[in-house]
Image (tube, rainbow, N blue to C red; front, side, top):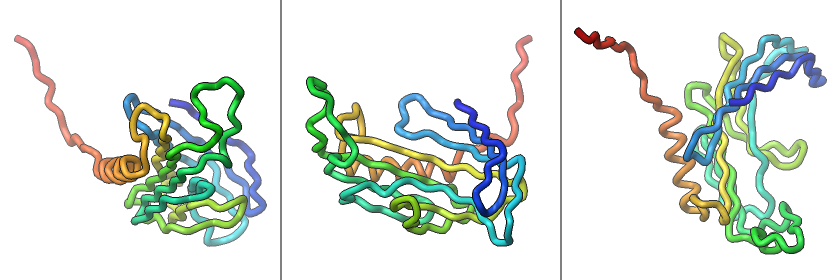
Length: 179
Protein backbone atom coordinates (compact mmCIF):
# COMPACT_ATOMS: atom_id res chain seq x y z
CA UNK A 1 0.00 0.00 0.00
CA UNK A 2 1.28 3.45 -0.90
CA UNK A 3 -0.03 6.65 0.67
CA UNK A 4 0.09 9.88 -1.31
CA UNK A 5 -0.83 13.21 0.28
CA UNK A 6 -1.29 16.37 -1.78
CA UNK A 7 -1.38 19.64 0.17
CA UNK A 8 -2.38 23.12 -1.00
CA UNK A 9 -3.59 21.87 -4.39
CA UNK A 10 -4.88 24.92 -6.28
CA UNK A 11 -6.78 23.82 -9.37
CA UNK A 12 -8.00 27.18 -10.61
CA UNK A 13 -11.44 26.14 -9.35
CA UNK A 14 -10.63 25.79 -5.66
CA UNK A 15 -8.10 24.63 -3.10
CA UNK A 16 -7.93 21.06 -1.88
CA UNK A 17 -5.96 18.54 0.13
CA UNK A 18 -6.26 14.93 -0.99
CA UNK A 19 -5.04 11.71 0.61
CA UNK A 20 -4.87 8.60 -1.57
CA UNK A 21 -4.12 5.00 -0.60
CA UNK A 22 -3.03 2.84 -3.55
CA UNK A 23 -3.23 -0.88 -2.75
CA UNK A 24 -1.84 -3.60 -4.99
CA UNK A 25 -2.78 -7.26 -4.65
CA UNK A 26 -0.88 -10.48 -5.17
CA UNK A 27 -1.91 -12.37 -8.32
CA UNK A 28 -4.12 -9.51 -9.55
CA UNK A 29 -3.71 -7.23 -12.55
CA UNK A 30 -5.24 -4.27 -10.76
CA UNK A 31 -4.80 -1.91 -7.86
CA UNK A 32 -7.41 -0.02 -5.88
CA UNK A 33 -7.30 3.57 -4.73
CA UNK A 34 -9.10 5.03 -1.74
CA UNK A 35 -9.39 8.81 -1.99
CA UNK A 36 -10.21 11.19 0.87
CA UNK A 37 -10.30 14.99 0.95
CA UNK A 38 -9.27 16.37 4.38
CA UNK A 39 -9.79 19.86 2.90
CA UNK A 40 -12.28 20.58 0.12
CA UNK A 41 -12.76 24.27 -0.72
CA UNK A 42 -14.22 24.69 -4.23
CA UNK A 43 -14.62 28.20 -5.66
CA UNK A 44 -18.10 27.45 -6.99
CA UNK A 45 -21.12 25.22 -6.52
CA UNK A 46 -21.54 21.96 -8.41
CA UNK A 47 -17.99 20.62 -8.03
CA UNK A 48 -17.96 16.81 -8.14
CA UNK A 49 -15.48 13.98 -7.66
CA UNK A 50 -13.82 12.46 -10.68
CA UNK A 51 -11.29 9.92 -11.88
CA UNK A 52 -10.20 8.58 -15.24
CA UNK A 53 -7.75 6.75 -17.46
CA UNK A 54 -6.13 7.80 -20.70
CA UNK A 55 -7.83 6.57 -23.85
CA UNK A 56 -5.15 4.52 -25.58
CA UNK A 57 -3.86 5.65 -28.96
CA UNK A 58 -5.02 3.67 -31.99
CA UNK A 59 -7.80 2.15 -29.87
CA UNK A 60 -9.36 -1.05 -31.17
CA UNK A 61 -11.12 -2.12 -27.94
CA UNK A 62 -13.69 -0.04 -26.08
CA UNK A 63 -16.11 -1.39 -23.51
CA UNK A 64 -18.16 0.82 -21.24
CA UNK A 65 -21.04 -0.21 -19.01
CA UNK A 66 -22.07 1.53 -15.78
CA UNK A 67 -18.93 2.30 -13.76
CA UNK A 68 -16.65 0.12 -15.93
CA UNK A 69 -14.55 1.22 -18.90
CA UNK A 70 -11.92 -0.81 -20.79
CA UNK A 71 -9.72 0.55 -23.58
CA UNK A 72 -7.16 -1.35 -25.64
CA UNK A 73 -4.96 -1.29 -28.71
CA UNK A 74 -3.03 -3.71 -30.87
CA UNK A 75 -0.45 -1.05 -31.86
CA UNK A 76 1.86 0.16 -29.11
CA UNK A 77 4.08 2.21 -31.41
CA UNK A 78 2.85 5.42 -29.74
CA UNK A 79 3.95 4.14 -26.31
CA UNK A 80 7.23 2.27 -26.64
CA UNK A 81 10.69 3.34 -27.63
CA UNK A 82 12.55 0.05 -27.90
CA UNK A 83 16.09 -0.11 -26.59
CA UNK A 84 18.55 -1.82 -28.93
CA UNK A 85 19.13 -5.39 -27.83
CA UNK A 86 16.12 -5.49 -25.44
CA UNK A 87 14.57 -8.92 -26.11
CA UNK A 88 11.26 -7.95 -24.44
CA UNK A 89 10.19 -5.42 -27.06
CA UNK A 90 9.20 -5.89 -30.68
CA UNK A 91 9.75 -2.41 -32.12
CA UNK A 92 6.59 -1.11 -30.46
CA UNK A 93 4.21 -3.34 -32.37
CA UNK A 94 2.56 -5.72 -29.94
CA UNK A 95 -0.63 -7.75 -30.14
CA UNK A 96 -2.26 -6.00 -27.16
CA UNK A 97 -2.17 -3.28 -24.48
CA UNK A 98 -5.19 -2.61 -22.25
CA UNK A 99 -6.30 -0.33 -19.44
CA UNK A 100 -9.42 -0.60 -17.31
CA UNK A 101 -11.17 1.51 -14.67
CA UNK A 102 -13.98 0.54 -12.30
CA UNK A 103 -15.91 2.91 -10.03
CA UNK A 104 -18.30 1.31 -7.57
CA UNK A 105 -22.01 1.69 -8.40
CA UNK A 106 -22.47 3.08 -4.86
CA UNK A 107 -20.85 6.35 -6.01
CA UNK A 108 -23.29 6.79 -8.94
CA UNK A 109 -20.57 7.28 -11.58
CA UNK A 110 -21.40 9.06 -14.83
CA UNK A 111 -19.15 8.23 -17.78
CA UNK A 112 -17.77 10.84 -20.16
CA UNK A 113 -14.96 11.36 -22.64
CA UNK A 114 -12.85 14.31 -21.55
CA UNK A 115 -11.01 16.10 -24.36
CA UNK A 116 -8.84 18.17 -21.99
CA UNK A 117 -5.21 17.08 -21.58
CA UNK A 118 -5.57 14.49 -24.35
CA UNK A 119 -8.51 12.14 -24.50
CA UNK A 120 -9.42 10.51 -21.20
CA UNK A 121 -12.23 8.20 -20.19
CA UNK A 122 -13.55 9.68 -16.97
CA UNK A 123 -16.26 9.27 -14.39
CA UNK A 124 -17.91 12.06 -12.43
CA UNK A 125 -19.53 11.34 -9.11
CA UNK A 126 -21.59 13.35 -6.62
CA UNK A 127 -19.80 14.34 -3.43
CA UNK A 128 -20.11 11.94 -0.52
CA UNK A 129 -20.83 12.96 3.07
CA UNK A 130 -17.33 12.00 4.20
CA UNK A 131 -15.62 13.46 1.08
CA UNK A 132 -14.18 10.10 0.02
CA UNK A 133 -14.53 7.55 -2.79
CA UNK A 134 -12.75 4.51 -4.26
CA UNK A 135 -11.87 3.11 -7.66
CA UNK A 136 -10.00 0.20 -9.28
CA UNK A 137 -7.46 0.43 -12.14
CA UNK A 138 -6.33 -2.54 -14.23
CA UNK A 139 -3.74 -3.07 -16.91
CA UNK A 140 -2.38 -5.82 -19.12
CA UNK A 141 -0.37 -6.34 -22.27
CA UNK A 142 0.50 -9.12 -24.65
CA UNK A 143 3.89 -9.81 -23.09
CA UNK A 144 2.44 -10.25 -19.61
CA UNK A 145 2.31 -13.64 -17.91
CA UNK A 146 -1.50 -13.55 -17.88
CA UNK A 147 -4.29 -11.64 -19.65
CA UNK A 148 -2.26 -11.30 -22.81
CA UNK A 149 -5.13 -10.59 -25.20
CA UNK A 150 -8.03 -8.16 -25.46
CA UNK A 151 -10.86 -10.67 -24.89
CA UNK A 152 -9.30 -12.10 -21.70
CA UNK A 153 -8.55 -8.65 -20.31
CA UNK A 154 -12.02 -7.27 -21.03
CA UNK A 155 -13.67 -10.23 -19.23
CA UNK A 156 -11.17 -9.90 -16.36
CA UNK A 157 -12.06 -6.24 -15.78
CA UNK A 158 -15.80 -6.94 -16.01
CA UNK A 159 -15.47 -9.80 -13.46
CA UNK A 160 -13.19 -7.76 -11.18
CA UNK A 161 -15.78 -4.96 -11.34
CA UNK A 162 -18.59 -7.30 -10.27
CA UNK A 163 -16.50 -8.57 -7.36
CA UNK A 164 -15.41 -5.04 -6.40
CA UNK A 165 -19.05 -3.90 -6.37
CA UNK A 166 -20.17 -6.90 -4.31
CA UNK A 167 -17.54 -7.61 -1.64
CA UNK A 168 -18.00 -10.32 0.93
CA UNK A 169 -19.29 -8.66 4.10
CA UNK A 170 -18.88 -10.31 7.49
CA UNK A 171 -21.28 -8.84 10.03
CA UNK A 172 -20.19 -10.72 13.13
CA UNK A 173 -17.74 -13.35 14.17
CA UNK A 174 -17.76 -15.36 17.35
CA UNK A 175 -14.30 -16.36 18.50
CA UNK A 176 -13.92 -19.98 19.54
CA UNK A 177 -12.51 -20.62 22.98
CA UNK A 178 -10.30 -23.61 23.73
CA UNK A 179 -11.07 -25.45 26.97
